[in-house]
Length: 366
Image 1 (cartoon, rainbow, N blue to C red):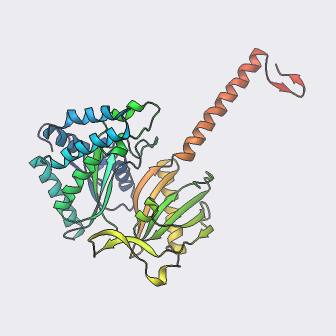
Image 2 (cartoon, helix red, strand yellow):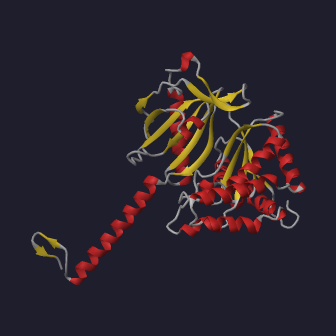
Image 3 (cartoon, rainbow, N blue to C red):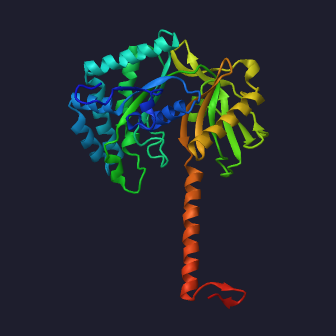
């Protein structure tokens, strides 16, 4: 808890109050919802937006943060990069309040205890208040760090996620027609989540992202961590699945010679060779494809709209949900089409009552 408020510094995604909590930002609130829904989400906790704001206030940086956002609006790129570098350096150098540091250390130790693994590898992910919401504002603009081990490194990367709020890419991101929207005081949660040591991983959509066809599930995957698919660093294999019968309608198996995995040589995630016998082999078998498509359908039904899902299959074959966000491209287009159709129908009725416009069979309708 903070010393000045009842809002917690840390909120576990399996706590009942985590579901829908703004303290977790968009990404981690979605994972809390999935956890409560019984989906296989790796365990973890969020270092809340309260903790982030408490850090800024304690370090005397809160007002400067608002000024940096406001100053970035309309500034040229060189100036944005300058103020970004200056302020991120200030965040990196500022001391962490002792009670906040203790809360993070305690939570990581509890995650180690729950998993039975000392030095547990975790993903440290930014989860912004406006990220992964239905409007997709700020989606994908923040940082994720993989295979972080030990409380010291967790604390270091939490601070890096906070600093990432003021990276040049975020400060110049314009999600709305009003460019001043970026100056709003967006808070951020930092999620700390057990790593899945993935044999294969990737993304899937509960519609065809190319055509918008909602009768399909499209799965893209690769050997190793899903970073290869998400970052575009690896050409993924692609499977198109019928959402009703789960028949694989199309499969494009990519030849893959490198995968993202933990590399002991650099003690970090990097590109490593794929085993020779796997380079031309599919990263998913038919049983796993069926399980993923079924999972996608369940998640879509649970959330009531098309979804964009990150997944991983562990070495033991277990399927895990790593991230869930609303699909935005086709859903937005369909919403626009519906509004246009409604407007057209209203215009048709008004024209009839006005006695103008609509002609049927050569006669004016009235």
